[in-house]
Image (cartoon, rainbow, N blue to C red; front, side, top):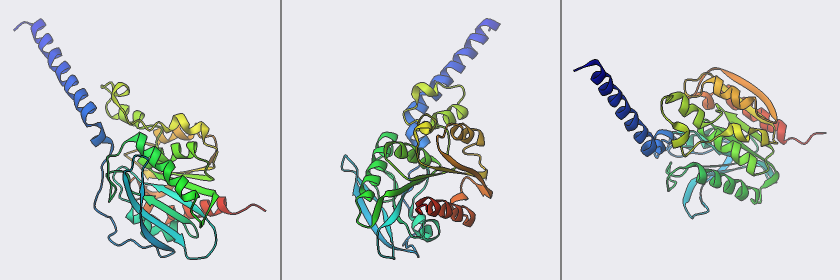
Length: 278
């Protein structure tokens, strides 16, 4: 075989492989981005600092969304938090740790569509709609002060929290290991593919960051091979109301929310934001 034919054959093989990878990305991007975890991390979750009850809400299309509502044992109207989890996260662990993370606050956390006991399939558009629904529902709760509501998002959930905070008036925002956009992370992972043309669920937080009016607290992992710090830097540079950008010592992308240092810092930040200024 001549050199020209060999080169043509090689180019054809490369083109075929590229087309195959592109087709796989287009067809399987939901599986690449979301990793629905059905099994509970904590089998019988209870908060030591709250009254805890399992709760089911409905998305705007009627989809069943299951999770937990935690209300402080103290009487009276309280500030509140809505929590959004990560890519592989089933949120029952948050109930167990809510007494440390959110003392004196009402807490609502629901599993994403397809996660835990929630029905449906995850996707950006409906996840954002579900997030806004949760904030609206919580603001109407008789034990919640609707002027003192915060959102907390971890990893994938940081993109949900950013858009929810833009679309609904919240008092504070906490972002744990946040990214600039899923699109940017995907382009980093698949540099040879036309990701910008194919990706449906982009979670482009960096495009919304300038519209956030609430004080925003960013917590990074000391070692993070899922969301490199360069992608957090891009987001932080655009945040309109950055309160603090902090690295948690001895943390990685997976363990950061469980660490006592992380939980104490989040609790302190939210308590300070919710406390009326003299």
